[in-house]
Image 1 (tube, rainbow, N blue to C red):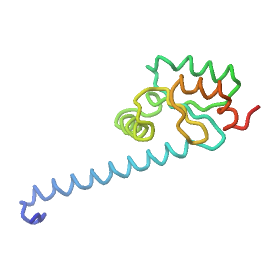
Image 2: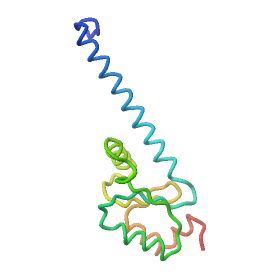
Image 3: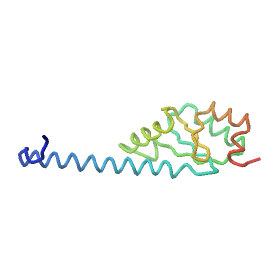
Image 4: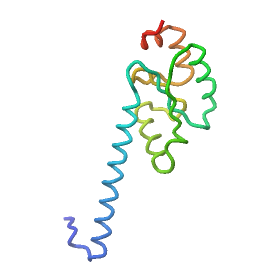
Length: 132
């Protein structure tokens, strides 16, 4: 049976510190997931990007050509260090894709550039946004 009191005092402190750090990491991860969800607003396009994304420029140009307003959130610029990994992991949980840009419409994951092109071609993007 595990008991914190079976360890010498120095070890107890280490175990306690590890638990504290784990709790803090969990709180930060939860806060980041809440932040992601808060950015996915109804009636709006949100694009999560990465500076290194090869399709970023094409995706932005397509949205601008179609006169679709959007918010772009660059994970590399806005979330340095550990938070960047947590953001990317949380986005992967929603999208099941590591590819950027990740396009969301009214809070729903649309996909990448090809998926966005399909949504524009079919008219479903403008219907979702109530644009004509």
